[in-house]
Image (tube, rainbow, N blue to C red; front, side, top):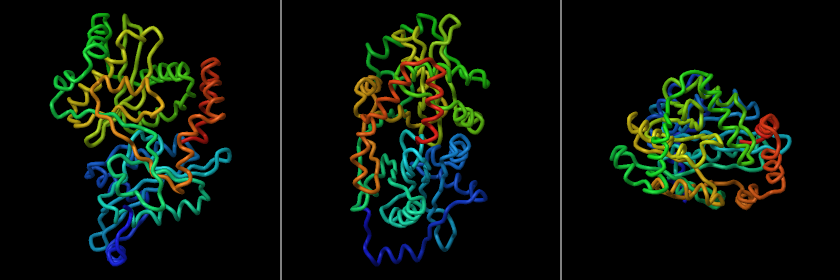
Length: 368
């Protein structure tokens, strides 16, 4: 529970203070993130730079708890202001992160951070605040924060190596399809330049159109490629007889390797392309020394995608989204079913590709 006794609160406040990290503290912040088991690429200064460069309506605030004696960072939480004349101002931790956690080790850490978060919230005249959690939900539950569990997270533990992971795959739904794709001559390689990144993006946009989802602006992916491409980002491209049939963008940081975005060509559907891409990504994660492979989050309403991820033997658990005020919890699942969301999906799926991109360019000036 997000409570500590009054004397403990006074002692904690006396020994520690909360600051907003400035650019000259970026290196120290990232070093702190790397020391945390829950530290992910979404917590880094580089992620903040990519988001602010790609989406001008987002402003990041990296909040850190400093030990008074040493001046060292003891806990932290990135939160972002989302400014929108259309949807109203909101706050989120962290935009475009499929799964994330505050960088805290106790409810006392959150007790110190929350007043600073709410100060920014009130300055922004925000109407809601969402703090994404995974393993730290218990430290945020309180009378002031509601918890929505509208999403699930699927992941694999990689300590046993790729062959052990492979044995956990469904024999018919995954193993058989991997062999089918390999026999059909599907080959997978890593992207080498921006032309390859654009090929990934084309496959992604085509897939999102089929799913009636608006395109995420290309500039976001270019920013990620430029910032993380040499060390933390890999794009996998699948070809069959020289034709591109599938692609994935993956990120790796600390213990976690995650598939962030995936797309495929109509001609590649049902041929095992998606299964072989995930298998190649898992082998890459093992080769690079990561201990967790994340399939990302999935809405509880998306039964088809839930089944797909379960077929890999993935561990499934709830993602807790802590929401302020509590009354805003009711709006999380309803957004997916709203009239506006229905209209956006219809327009995104029914028109040509250029219209899908145009809708995406507009929507992502307001979404996060």
